[in-house]
View 1 (cartoon, rainbow, N blue to C red):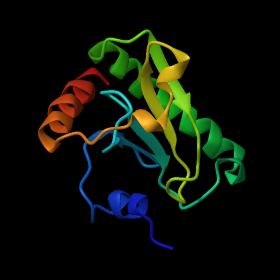
View 2: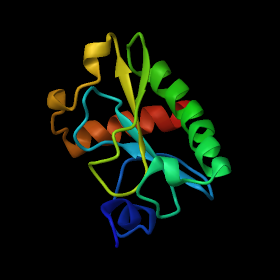
View 3: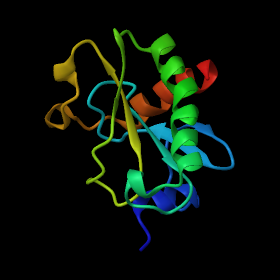
Length: 129
């Protein structure tokens, strides 16, 4: 099944890209919980994080680390929270969310962001990666 994330990986759907290598891709969430909310995904199709091979699972967190550090440089927050819900899109992904408290990890707080806001923030984070 082709998901929105497969279409983003293939370049058929645009995104505000933060990081990409041969195996992983990171981009800003279109409905961020907080500004700087990003996703990191493996480029292989897999719908459940714990079905990933161990090396791909480990690589996902390694790919997320520089993105999280870059978001911290750009967005004022206490730290970057990491969340895996796994139900929104049937493609493994982790959420990197700038937080100041545990209550910030709440999808009910998500809001639409404008393309201009996302583009400006993505450029700042890419420059910090």
